[in-house]
Amino acid sequence: MIGIGVSNLVDSFEAGIEIAREAKADLGDDASPQLALAMIGGAYDIPELLRGIRSELGDIPITGGAATGIISREYLGYSGTECSLMLFSPALGEVRYLVSDPFAGGEELAGEKLGREIAACADAGSTVFLLYDTKEIGAFNFPYHGSRLLNGIYSGLGDEQVTLLGARVSGDINFTNSFVLDGKAISNQIALAIILPGTLKPHTRSIHGCLPASRIYEVTRAEGNTVYELDNRPVRDVVREITGFMPEMDTDIPLPKGDLSFLVTFGCWMGEETNDFSESAFMNRLVISSDSVTGSVRILDTDLHVGTKVQIMARDSQAIMDSTRAETTALLAEVAHDKVVFASYIDCGGRTAAVSATDGEEADIVRSLLPLGLPLFGFYTGGELGPTPVRSHPLDWTGVLTLFTYEPDGS
Image (cartoon, rainbow, N blue to C red; front, side, top):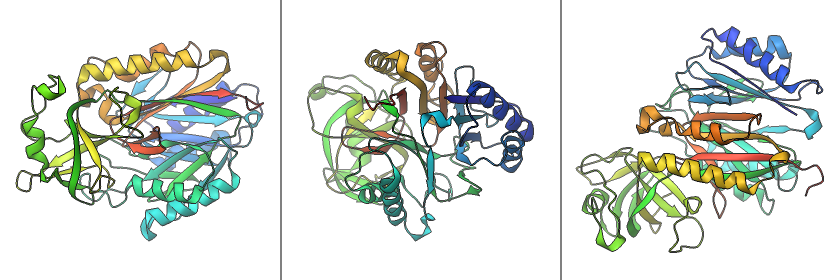
């Protein structure tokens, strides 16, 4: 029912041919695929790679976008010359796709229209893969932000219940070379929604390994993606004050004393706050820069407003590995393996060993724990999207693992 092909050939045309042939062979004797989903490293000549795919598959809609790297059963890499392709058999039911209006008119308005269109054609409980492009203007200075897009989509969805998974696409770890494949062309500054049939049921875990290292604070001054104050004090002062041992938190997690970039996150409780720590209850916002003059920090979105409650979260290399193993094991224990058709793993590029200095790749833990023979369609990205106890949100420094079970009777 699912066919997956992976290539790390350097030649773009040949890489396109290879992933198309592998995916077709993996699909087996099923009917001709109805749609292709391709994730492509930013170092490729994209038109040439697409030409290679079409030379094997014909005029099939090719959806997808840029990928920071590829994660599959057989291969993991993030050099920029990795790509993967997934094909869907008609036996699963109809796979549809929609494309948003350009974000130049406002990503919330574009999202609201897209949400209405999703609601009009999605089966109840469907999964929607959402891929969106934020064309960079300078290092990490995005003109478009996922939270605004998601706010618009949920407004347009109304009461329609769907599971949103996906990514802010990026062709490398520096958030460059991003693009979306809209089924017909290579596009920028749009969102693509791939609507899976209701026969595929998602079972998801959001994995980050970030640990609370402070009490709860309130954002008291913020503008755009810059947070200036927590509890009426400069953010840098608050973070530096809690560096090291904190008796009131009974923790000895070390925090940085200098620049805060990529070393801490702000964790927001999603749903009811409790005394019991649960990874899935937190949405994290990564600090991408800090200003010693204003005491402010910049984050990867615009959704930490005045009044938002946050905790300082410490990133820890061993915690990333430990949480990946624990959460993957827990998810596998909850799902009937004989019903699982394929797995997806949408992973933050910052969680790679090259960036996080982990002892090995945390995605290798996922690969090793999945049942033998289970197809895995995974990729690294510039920002993952997954569910929280309230709804789906753009997430930072997170791996979103989903097992899809085939349940034609809706059970």
